Image (tube, rainbow, N blue to C red):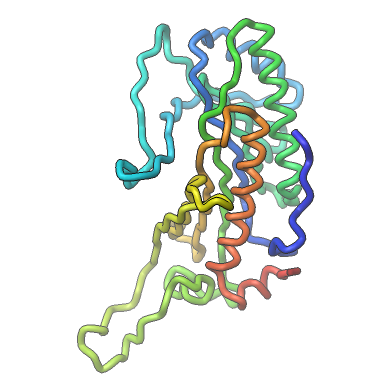
Length: 280
C-alpha cells in the first residue's frame, strides 16, 4: 500500500490518552481454512509473535444504509463445510502488538503497555499491510484462497482521567463537550437529582463521501471503567471499501482515521486539549 502523509490540518496532540489502535479487514469466508493451517500460520510469524492463544470467532458484521438499515450492524449466521477453526491470536514479546486471524477477518492491534510509545497511525498502517501481505502469501502457498475485502474498521481506544484527580465519572463535562452538568441545587424540583455515580453514552455518525453518499459510520462510545476514576472513550470508523481490494481498504482506513481524530477533537474540551498538549 502506498504510504500516506498526515494531513496538514489534522489535529494533533503530544500526549493523547490513547491506549489502543485497531485496524481490521473483514473478507469473504475462506472455506478451505482448517485448524492445521492455524498452526502453520503461527509458525510463519512465531519469531516476531511468540505468544499464542485461541478465542471464539467474531461474527461477520456489515454497516448498511437506506430504508432497511438496522439500528445496529447486521449479523449473519454461517454454516461451515467443516469444523469451526478458532480465532488465532499471535502476540509479540512485550504485548504491544496483537495479530488476530480467522476465516473471514484479519486484525492488527497496537496496545500501550509498559509505557510503550505510540508509534503513530502511519507506522501502524504500514505494519498492518506488511503483515497482511505475509498472510496473503501464506494463503496462496497453501491453496486456501484469496482475500476479498467487504468491510473494514479503524478503532481508537482512549482512557481519560482528569488532571486535578477529580473523578471523571461524576464530572464528565470537564472532558466531554457532549455532556452538561446538572445543578443539584436548582430550585426546580424536576431538576433535583442525587449525586451522579457514573455516566456513559453511545453516538453514531454517518460518514459521507464528497458526493454526499454514505461511506460508513463513526461510532463513539463512553463508559466508566471498573472502580477507577477514568472514562473509556472508543471511536470506531466502520464501513465497506469502495471496491473489494486492499487499496480500497487503505483508503477507508485513512478516511476512518481522519473521522476519528476530528471527532475526538470535536467531542472533547479545550481544557483537556491543553492537558494532552494539543499541537494544532
